[in-house]
Picture (spheres, rainbow, N blue to C red):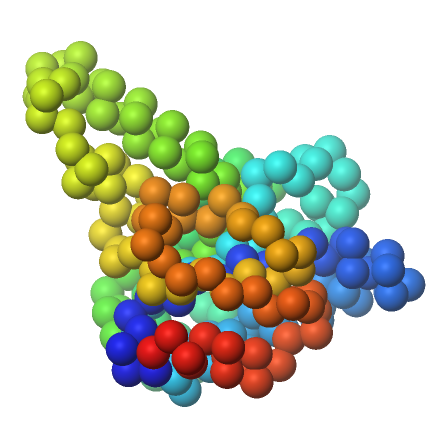
Length: 222
């Protein structure tokens, strides 16, 4: 997979799979985040420089009990990740895209700590999209550009595709070579601006049934 620089992965809904299989949401989240950790191991194994994982859309009901449980697992995941040898030995820089700072405080602190702890790493890059929406990312970029115009820093005629890219959450990353989608066979809102020329591949199963062989579908694009 030496030719692939950036693989983006969109994960499906944990709760739907748990209901379908009569498994508690807590148990499902445990399996879900274990699988996410395994993605990082595969990133290293296949030498993928950039991996972006869409794990929590902003459309989730923030008042639900499942959201609170999920937030606790996010906090636990990033806390455990920070203390693991994987990040340190492989020099994986963690970035989080989206409105993650609106999560419950414990989750926000765990994310801040792992971002800070890996800020100087640059061998591999792992991005997590949390409380994220691709359309909102573009809207936010437009707002930033509008402020620059308002302040006289740029003129309307100076706005280009590059201007928009420079103001997205993922401004400093290459566009994904491929977006791999778990769950329903439909496009997600993952990295909408950057995915104009990306390949799209469907896992045709839930991420809860993840296995390393799933990446065989990605390898054909390398």
